[in-house]
Image (cartoon, rainbow, N blue to C red; front, side, top):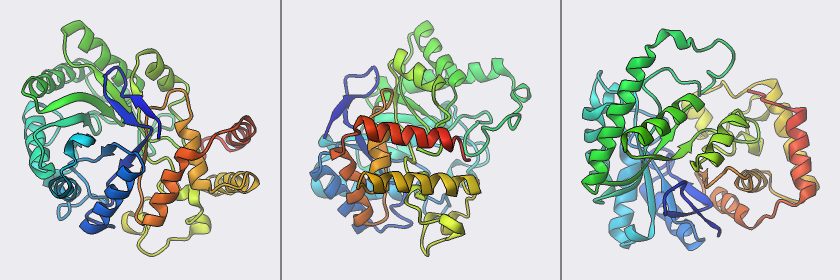
Length: 348
């Protein structure tokens, strides 16, 4: 396993990160523990979770994933061996902290305490803002004119950024979190946070966690350049496009127990998506590779990527995904993947 610095921090993380969002919904506590045992044995030292998990989000399972990680820490005594990342939820889920839930001092302080309790730890290595208060451009809202940036007051947004950074500074000084990061954020939001941190001597965002996969590469080249030049660790989530890269959803198929069956999410499903997936599957066959392992190996080889967040509902899937650590992206394979993207750009 390769280990890399987490952005501008001195924390070293494995180039593959274990995502956890299925635990407590699609996976039991025992299955979550089994996944963590296997991942650690394979050299993974980086876990990513969130206060809103399990997925799909609902009141009945909110916080359950963190609880499963907490019982694993208690059982194994391996807390100090793990770089632990979690996230505070933004607006939109009133069952977590009521209708006034947003990123502000009151909600962040309450969220940190809740996560620490569920995780059975007294510190969090990387604390991330799961999504902004303002309307964000993720989850299918990245197409032209889908977001009206004039609808929100930029001055108020910046004032909120300062409040957020000051609150995170409190938590760092109290020893409750070590580093801070962003998730589902834009180029403007990332640069504004970095500028405010420098101007005011407040904590610096060391990471950015956005959706990135072979089918969805909207963060190149603009956000990728920011990450390299500003030394922000890029953490791609959903490197398999929520399982679509495997081909299991081709032709409208919805396997029993799959995430798509549970969520009904469909913005990633287009005829162009199916065509692109078939093309990537063909590339994998030509190079005698599993398409999922190939996709993860390619993504973690990119110059701006720090650690690629994987997830699985079965041990077979997990083993395949982690096997990507041993795949070398040779020039011919790199060219084949990138030519496929040029022929099938941004299918969703």
